[in-house]
Length: 213
Image (cartoon, helix red, strand yellow):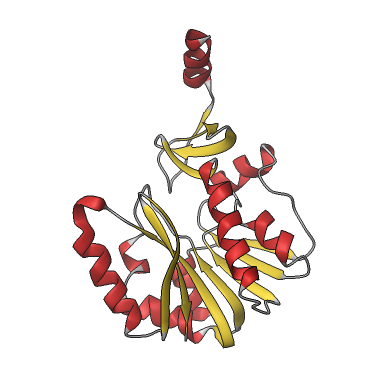
């Protein structure tokens, strides 16, 4: 049985991407998952993560009519968001068309008339966008780290400026145990802009922040 699992692991098809390291489908925590360079990006344990996050958000009784999703990857966050907010309008911005194609081929998320996805660099795109959103989800990763440009004041301010008066941000930030000071400095930066900064979910390598203006 072990040898068969090992064989299946190495025979899985890989997909070339100009954005991510070679991408492949696999399983993590008993669920379908997308891996980039052997690092899980969507599905797997993130199904539990986003369901827990959305349960928390629903419990706080936020009114969410629309959502801007910066970083879609395999679309793991879409289903739990729709479960609690079935009428929400979702606009997803994803830089890598390959990972989206893989997700759709393997039915990691379902298409919906109220969900639109655009291929673009989210950091560049939000500078030009003129709309306001009740919920902005920032889930931008290259490997296990957020891109540096997604952690600077200008980007954090751009995100805040796109919120409706009672809008919220869910920011999925990386965390390195060996560099805890890095996380502390990032939290200080965020607190200069947002009145509420709260960790509402955490794994060993990432934390989900809830932000309010």
